[in-house]
Amino acid sequence: AQSVTQPDIHITVSEGASLELRCNYSYGATPYLFWYVQSPGQGLQLLLKYFSGDTLVQGIKGFEAEFKRSQSSFNLRKPSVHWSDAAEYFCAGKPGAGGTSYGKLTFGQGTILTVHP
Amino acid sequence: ETGVTQTPRHLVMGMTNKKSLKCEQHLGHNAMYWYKQSAKKPLELMFVYSLEERVENNSVPSRFSPECPNSSHLFLHLHTLQPEDSALYLCASSHRLAGRDEQFFGPGTRLTVL
Image 1 (tube, rainbow over the protein chains, first blue to last red):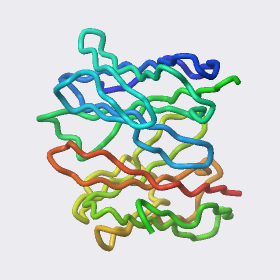
Image 2: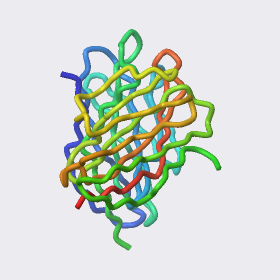
Image 3: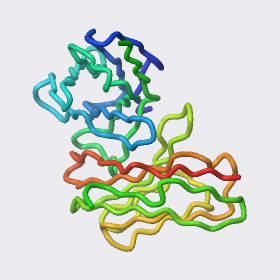
């Protein structure tokens, strides 16, 4: 079955530390992958997306993600976390080229990020 | 207005009430979506409208009824809801082009069913 998994429910880091949020996917072919961020009481904001090509993807707010086919992963990284990065982060995927998805995104369970001063 | 807007932002209703959620996108997109976000559950896709045609109903109970009168507006009509329907309802839109469409989300409507 097609799925996206975020193994970490909650992560705490200190401000200025580096961050990596994990995402694993299960699709028959290379999927399209996304990372979203959600602040309390808000909708989801797209951070970055991967369709094909360069496996290192740059996004907004200083985030990047790396697509690793061999590990079925699409982990989100940031070299130095700011207190304003505290939020919930969602990885999402859909079938890639040749798939019939009708736009259906499958979301992971989300990872809550807490930033300590 | 820019992006995707949703009204109302908060809604409290009884189990016998009828209400509607409204979503409007100002992005020129051609697909719109309703999602349900419950505590400790992944986001659930409820409905997809592409080019004003509903293309998927994710086994959602009939007490939820979507309406998409044009490519910019999407409604979710609610009637005889249950307390377990309390959740954040998110609307999204995208420009579907060979599947390479990222979805843009509205701020959501926080629904509480008493």
